[in-house]
Image 1: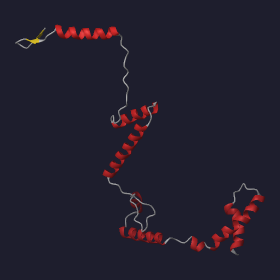
Image 2 (image 1 turned 120 degrees about the vertical axis):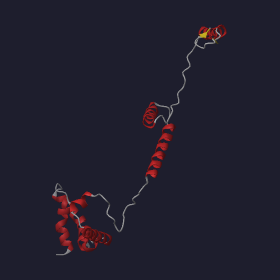
Image 3 (image 1 turned 90 degrees about the horizontal axis):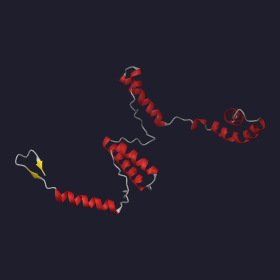
Image 4 (image 1 turned 30 degrees about the horizontal axis):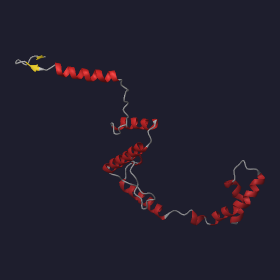
Length: 180
């Protein structure tokens, strides 16, 4: 069979959902047959094993034969397999770098919270930050000055001046008691 006839046969099975009505399946079959035929024609080159993967598997099998041991002990160890090629960057940070990263992130969070307007949400964040980090951020509090009457002011000044003038503290020679 040619790749076109195989594609016509397998396209509805592979790519069309079961709930699709037959008339739509026939319309879509015409559009999807060519890509499936391409996959069938180029299958050996498309689905070839990567050379790096083959090298990694061969080296792993050699290491497992040299090491001997049971299969269960190898499965229990969670050591990463050394590969020929790595597809992602793996960072191995020392504990000092991790701590510096954490401190840097906390400083950025602190700056962000300080830049927020004075609202209830900021107070909530500050309270939570202080709870977790030992009072690192101080809230800017406005002092509420009470309105005082003239009589209260005069009583305070009069009481302070009479208290200081009348009482003079002296020590006795035995230093047991303070005399007024």
